[in-house]
Length: 242
Ligand code: NAP
Image (cartoon, rainbow, N blue to C red; front, side):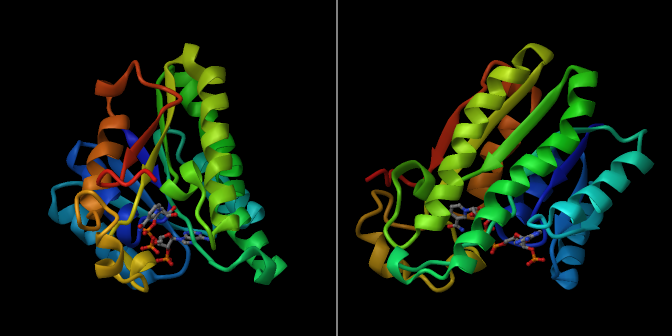
């Protein structure tokens, strides 16, 4: 059994990823920020699928919380070395750049980008020691092509793609792979305010994706089966690239 950490695992894509990783035989540490009820529901779904999970509540945008809560968990669980990390927690706060409050820029960058650095830095040592690791970063089509109204979000996701490619080269010789999945429009609470009918026209598959369709790919990248793939970005967007 391997130990996996999924950030933002209480809802949406992170919940589907938690269930997928548990189904693959991993014990899943489910991080979330505030929604206790939904986090407990994810843990129950993992257990219903025959897996095991535990909750670890901390704000990924808060460097000190990461160091205290995740750092403390790692210190107290030396028998559970994390070998799989899915950096999934993320937010969007859309606005045209001219109208964007500084706080929306900062909040999105702290949550989507800084979290990658501080969390991965804490988890990497056990992977380097075990000579095995799978890091999967959930980015976005917005980070690949840039999306009007999402200068903050696109910047955060594009930065994680660059960091993924750089880190992949640093740790490859220790058997640690670092990859991204870049979803297009996926049906979760994050996209609840987006009119699917309006966007269906521009998506070649004429529909939004399901969280499980992302989780399947994350599951592959988190498994031994993907051993020679690193520094990659896999797009999961129903053919929507432009
Ligand atoms: P979602 O349904 O809004 O769920 C967000 C999850 O992230 C929740 O579990 C939430 O925890 C957690 N979270 C948010 N901020 C956090 C923080 N500061 N600290 C800890 N946890 C935090 O979002 P989603 O659609 O599943 O998105 C997951 C990832 O996929 C994000 O990185 C997003 O950018 C990316 N993505 C999504 C889409 C899409 O169409 N849905 C497309 C491309 C990329 P609480 O429940 O406690 O709030």
